[in-house]
Length: 185
Ligand SMILES: CC(C)(COP(=O)(O)OP(=O)(O)OC[C@H]1O[C@@H](n2cnc3c(N)ncnc32)[C@H](O)[C@@H]1OP(=O)(O)O)[C@@H](O)C(=O)NCCC(=O)NCCS
Image (cartoon, rainbow, N blue to C red):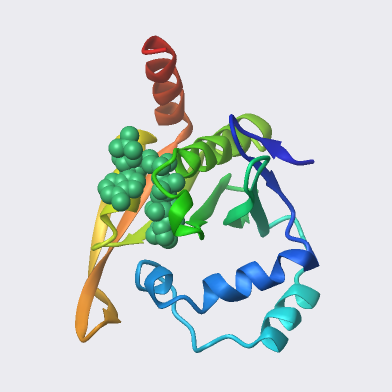
């Protein structure tokens, strides 16, 4: 089932998306702002990832699709723990020209609604490299998430160590966010 937001749709990754993913995975600017890290990724390796990935109920990847621009980014819901009802999520708007147009907020709030109102989860987690102000502002100021901690000197980028900020949002906090958002509409 696709997950429908205001101006985006979260849908499965298709083979036709691989060229886009290949570009994003090898973009130094994008990777500087992401916590994880990898070597240059070949088309063959990406194809292998695509072939090997099968939805098993604990990990799901979504393309962020728009009617105006097609696929513009990716988000995920991984390490879904059905017993304790939590999961980890991440986000990427891959096309620089389409940033700061509200798609990131749309994707995060759509994912929250899906996680809390469809899957019945109790909390969501994410982590953000400390210099990624855009992402911190998006989650903390615009989507109701809370900074829950910070691990020092986790990532080495451009000859410096960077902290990793730990964020979370609970079901209760999500409800407060929805009520506050409706109040200002
Ligand atoms: C971070 C990212 C997901 C934001 O997505 P986006 O679509 O540009 O964000 P939105 O347009 O929905 O912005 C929502 C809010 O986020 C914050 N924000 C977004 N970009 C920002 C920037 N460059 N600087 C400061 N705040 C920013 C603002 O609070 C903004 O609200 P405003 O426009 O009313 O001020 C996107 O820039 C991105 O994918 N960057 C590259 C990869 C990345 O950093 N991923 C996140 C890893 S944790």
